[in-house]
Image (cartoon, rainbow, N blue to C red):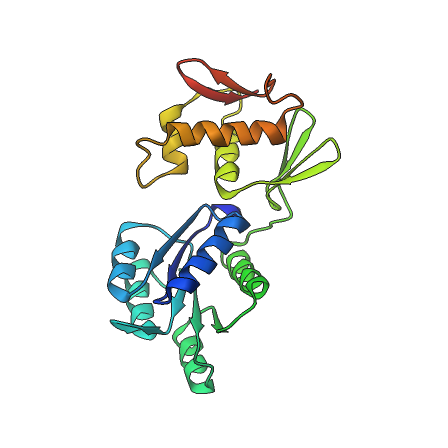
Length: 231
């Protein structure tokens, strides 16, 4: 597992914070960031999906984060890492969260860079991830999976979250044709119907970063009527 394969659940009743942190994580390359504004929604998502990290507010409209923490642990087990996000910085509140077994406690407001560093530290510690390892080469382009970048012709390009997941899937099946349905299911696991045009847009953007001549690709190929493949 790499950092960019980790799925995150964000639970907070502040719409502005959900939007800010959700966009921040997606830009950082995390493939799936689900959001819940209350305990009941968070519990439903926890039952339906697998996550590698939960970011959890302490004060929620239909309960408190400490109780929700214990309920999530009952469902998913003690190994699922949780980071508390809270505007309450009293020592007893912070110590209660850490005493329950939380992996970290971050007081609002926080710097976006600090949040990303704390998340990365918890994920690397929990899943023994080495984000400095792992590269691939496609033609003249060097892919650094840990950094989520492509280097080609002296330029460095940052992969978006969708581009990262799509390219990873294609590289893991190098030389094989992957159907449009398979790739759409990879990018939109909650329902891929109707995303064919969006997939084509992501393919075009990847070609602009990978290929010397994106209009005449040599490595990310279209197999007419079937799908795409990396050669």
